[in-house]
Image (cartoon, rainbow, N blue to C red; front, top):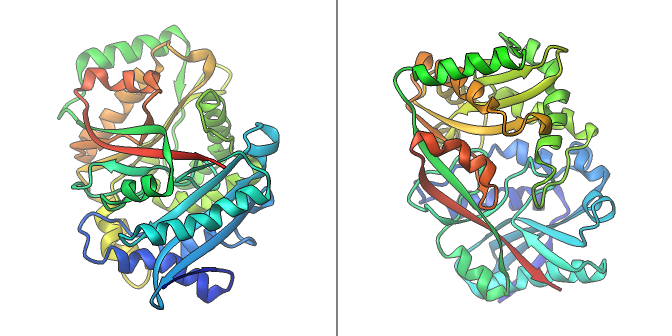
Amino acid sequence: MIEIKQATTKKELEQFVKFPFSLYKNSKNWVPPIIKEELNNFDRKKNPAFKNADAWFFLAYKNGAVAGRVCAIINWNEVKELGNSKLRFGWFDAIEDENVAKALFEKVFAIGKEHKLEFVEGPAGFSNMDKAGMLIEGFDRIGSMPTNYNYAYYPTLMDAVGFQKEVDWKEFEILTPNKVPEKLAKFSDLLMKKYNLKLIHTPNTKTLLPYAEKIFDLMNRSHEHLESFTPIKPYQIEHYKNKYLKFLDPDFVNLIADENDELVAFSIIMPSFSKALQKANGKLFPFGFYHLLKAQKKNNKATMLLIGVAPEYMRKGLTAIIFHKTYEVFVRRGIEIVETNPELETNNQVQALWKDYNPQLIKKWRTYRKYL
């Protein structure tokens, strides 16, 4: 027997957050989130996304035990400002049972119909800063902090519920050189002089903080042409600063400004925290912080988190400057492997950035759509 309940109490939301820990307890590749941060993300008082969003959390019980979960989200900025009559779904996990998936999504579809929305799309979060996409290739590789990991049977559940492909996302792996390519360094220096650009030095977190708003503003401008992108609102910036800042090493942040000190390009990379998060197993205390700090200081693998270039500087080669400065850090810090963040398969502009670095396609994600 399958029963669906809406999670509204603190205890039920804890069940919602902790269910994947039991589902993936035997998986070597699932990377757990920090439980407290997940709970804060779903707290209307702590996540400013709820200022313009509504969310419903559902748990599926089979024979009395939790067997699945899903979150339905209406991003009202997206619906009203961008004209996308869309209901998002995210945080979907379930045992290998089509009936469980169907029962969960019946609740999701009912919300979409109740609010007269045209279609359901996901997996996605409240905004583009949350994890998105369902893994469809690369199940044999360890997950990462910014991405979802799921079992290979998940796409079959999507088919059973009636979802169809919306778009795929790709992730590449690049082996970094043990020294900065001379040609890249010369080209980078040439561009710096040609456009009268300069690097913004942020030796520590305190000096990086004041640039957070400019980074998000530039990200909004550089990504606004992409499908499914919803701009980050000013009131959300503080939330994401608190959520991600503890993981950022200023050494891995590149900021490029023009002659007027306006930010024109940036990149944010982080050492891989996958194994550290597995050791932390959802908790920062007593030893989680230690594992994360150790991974930040000593690591041979990094993850490309965000990259942005001002529209007026697109196709002018500024990514060469970013790669030049990034490789300098990689060589100094012993980074041998870098994984790109998932990129839309239609985003040829970004994928073209890696073509000179022998990229290997290692994972693919898919977002799904179903019309109501």
